[in-house]
Length: 75
Image 1: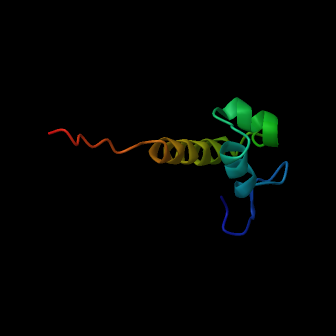
Image 2: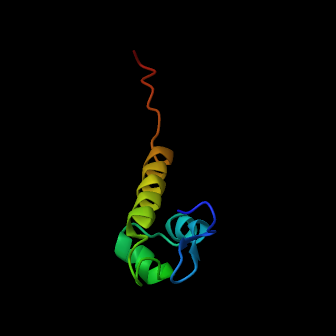
């Protein structure tokens, strides 16, 4: 993302926070989900690597949050 741009997807004016919210609050799990919910990366597609990276990081974060520590108290 350009240091001068507040948008992740300049063609359709989609911000990073909109993509993050699509994952965290609206359940997006694939690039297609992101495209359907935010329309990011449906224009010229130059932002596809950036959108994919944000999606990947958010999904990794969701997996980490979902982990539980299991302690065996019987040993």
